[in-house]
Every structure is written in structure tokens, then in C-alpha cells.
Length: 444
Image (cartoon, rainbow, N blue to C red):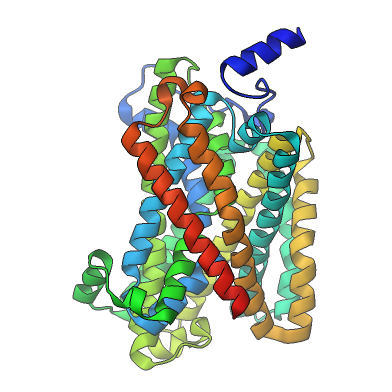
């Protein structure tokens, strides 16, 4: 029996045969309507892309968008556009891997690499998830401080309570999680739509910033640093693990025709969701440029929104969007943590316990730094969390591109020659940018 299993694995170039899927309690749990119209099918497949898009709107991204807009006006909108296009490409590859092979990225790494390599990838991925959670802790604490006046240190401690929400939602079903995530994304979008109206930006410079890259981005060292921060932190490594797994929650046919249809609808879902994330990130930068670049204020942007915009609700809307963003990232970070642990280790843990451990790892340094250094310390800790994420990113991107470009693993769903070249170019580009960002940050 073991020999047959090894033979099947070797024929597909996997080191190990596929095991139990991650998140087995929701695997194929969302049924698809038989003989439905295209629009009904699209709605049934919609959801995983929006779960993933949360990582592109988390508090860590807000810091770079605010800095870029307040210091350099609309110039870096092109960088946001470019980074979003790269994200759409990489998330589409995660969809292909999950649907075509029946493995998420964590399982694929375990089944392909030797055990020591797989363990190394698991450890740095867990560190990245904890670093990402650290950003959500700080962002949520700032939002609670703005809305309710709660001191930062108490806000950090209160973030441990969201574990109860995670437990409740997972008991109700996966569609409830997706519904909450989409609702919170809607709140973020509405808040920033209102912020744009309040800030009254100039349309022509915005269009110029989006579609015409400036030589200043390369010539100005500070601008280049922020640009690389935007690019390097855009694709969250755990999102690639998450996306390759949650697409398997749909009950599509596991034959070639069913997989082709699933990949097509999932990629549409992903592209739409990430274009919404593009709007949110661009809106943050536009509001910062229209408000702070004009006035010359670049410090504590969220506190200055109300006096500069002349709208008493401006800071509240910003804080509400930040709170929704932090809670969204909390939900998806928990799922990603489960997927990574189950995929790499075949170790199952109760969702609430997994969440409690991850959040404790994030809260401890946040409490210490907040108590000792206050707001300035949490800002530096937020930047450090993004550096950790940047360092880990290539360890997820390169295996993803490698697997989806291997015909023995993907069969008829392997990347075409042009897509393969583009994917490797993006992977190398991201790796070089993150190395540069890491070196410059450590020097600074």
C-alpha cells in the first residue's frame, strides 16, 4: 500500500501523496447551484477573493499610503496601481494551485520539499503571521483610542477579545465569515469615499499620478524608499496560503471541466476584490495628499483630519475604517494560521486556541513597547512588522511560481510560456525590492 502511494506521488512529481485538506470542516461545504445562470454562479463562487483582499487594506498598508500622500502628493499612485496588478497575478496563481492540485500552498510545500526545508518555511511563515497580527493589534488600538478615547495600552489588551467572534462565526458556517468580511470592507470603502468628498482632491493630478510614472520615484531616495515599502508590503505572504485553501470550500466538480470553470470564476472574484482594494489604498493616499501635502502637516495624520478638512466626522470615519480593517485582517489571519499549521504539520488545533496563541504573541511586544515608549514606539513597531513580512514574502512567492510552472504538478493547468515568464519576472522583482528594503531599514 505504501509503495502504491509513493508511486502515485512520484508520477505527479510530488514527494508525498495528498492528505486531508486543510480546514476539512468547510471543505466543499458551499454548494453551487446546478444549471444556474452565469451571474448566479459568479455569486456562488464570490467570497474567497474578498477574504484575500483584506490583506491589501490592513493597517500596515495605511502607514505607507499616508506617508506617500502627505510627503509626495499624488506621485506614488502609479506605484499603488503597479503593486495591485502584481497582486492580481500572484493571487490568480494561488487559485490555480489550489483548484488544479487540490493542495493549498502549505501542503504543496510539505509534499514537494524535504522535511527540514518544509519546517523552515513553516517557521518563517508563522513569524510572518504573528508580525501581521501585530499590525492589526496596533491599528485596532489606535482606532479604539480615536473613537472611545481608550488609552493605547488598554486598546492593545482589548484586542484579545476578538477570539470570541472568530469562534462564533466558524460555528455558524463559512459563508457567515465571508459575509462579515464583505460588510466590513464595505464600511471601509464608504468611509474613504466620504473622506475623498471632504478633502476635495484635484482630478487631473490624480489621473496623471495613476497612469504616468515620474522619474522622481527613482531619483528621490526618500520617495523610492516609500515606493518600495508600498510594493513590498502589498502582497501579504499568508494571503497566498489562504487563497489556495479557501477556494476549496466550494463544491465544484473535481474533473478538468469543473476545475476550469472554478478557476475562471475564482479569478474574476479575485480581480474584482483586489480592484476594490486598489480603490481603498489609492483613496488613503489621495486623502493624505489633498489634506496634508497642501498644508505641510505630515505628523499624526489621523488626528489632523478634522481640523484640516473642516468636517467633525472626518477623524471618526478614519477611525471607523481603521477598526473595520483591523478586525477584517484578524479574521483572515486566523484562517491563514490554521491553514499553515494544518498544511505544513498535519496538526489540527481548535480555532479559538490557535487564535489565542497568535494574538498573545502579538500582544506581548505591543503592550511592552506601548507602556515604555507610547505612540512613537508603536509606530516603529508597526514599521518593523512590515519589514518582517517583506522578508518572508519571497519564501511564499517563489514556491508558488515554481509549482504552477511545473507541468508534472499542474497538468493542463500549467502556466503558459508567457505567463511563466511574467510570473518569474514579478517574483524576482519582488525579491530584489524586499532585499533592498530590508537592507535600508536595518541600516536606518
